[in-house]
Image (cartoon, rainbow, N blue to C red):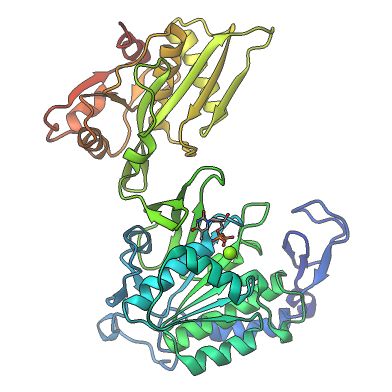
Length: 463
Ligand code: TYD
Ligand code: MG
């Protein structure tokens, strides 16, 4: 019995783990993909060791300690030279931490980390970049695009973790990049690189290296079809910080999002733009998102979404036209399709707009994906504006949640949104009336228009 419980099986297609063998994988529905993890029994003591030293930085200390006796290791932070990244990390790199950078292939993870390495080396740190995916000449090609490099930055193409451990212990760098975890392998783990067992064992080795030698290690992880870093989320539990690098491949902006952070908040995002010479920071995302907004066009509304603690202004576009076929077509790009349908129904019922014989297309310009209720009012006004073919005032910003009775409900962080609108030169702001009282100091030059329901809001759209 005890033996059966210790054995772990996993699906070699999607990494689904189970205590017993199964013919069909419940995760990916493939047949005959379950294999026994050969390291399951060996893994336990190794994991115990790792967990023992994790987070404390002092593996030798076995005696329980009072809070006042523990020395805080979190004070010294290394700046990555990129403000956007430092903010997501909670104020810079913590020594001895393990950071997972996940994202789709080709999104720019290697580019980002190469730039971080360059900045760190320039400010006098010793850095090692280990690639299991690219040859040294490929790395050089990329580096040439990024500009000049100086300081103690060295490169190694290697996939064997035993060798990598030796090199790290010998070279003693302050930070190491492992690109990517899916290419790394430990011979004693038995399975192929990229499999669940290998990824777990490799991460474990890196965890012990990081904690035992006070080295900051970045791990690159490709995201699988299912949207998790392979294997199934278990990597996330082992590391200190998980960052996801996302964005549309055909749009040039990229968002770095903190998903887990033992040393800071996960509310922050960093915005970058992929250029010909690498990633550039975008310190003012609102301006970036609104560049190219048409002037005097119907169906275009500026709304405000909160990305972490940062307000980002964006453009909502709607196009409403008569349907040529029996069934009206509705699409939503960048926001929730069902939410758009619901808002169309609210407009129809509560504001008397006849949309049932119209096609309606809603789009968040710039390729951002936002599912925040505060966009509701913007979507509603964009739809009404397009339906009437009357533009919404270009210097107006709109936010608020819409309820099923057509009421406009309060949203969070009102003051921040209002200030962002004022900062970017908007002269009026439509917001839930209940939120008006929450604004202590209304910014000068910004007219606040409180609305109680959808009808009041769309009455503002007039020539
Ligand atoms: P890369 O960092 O290799 O992605 P990942 O490591 O996440 O797989 O980035 C790949 C893409 O970035 C590639 O399509 C080319 C583009 N790119 C630029 O547009 N500008 C640049 O300066 C660099 C280095 C890459
Ligand atoms: Mg890469």
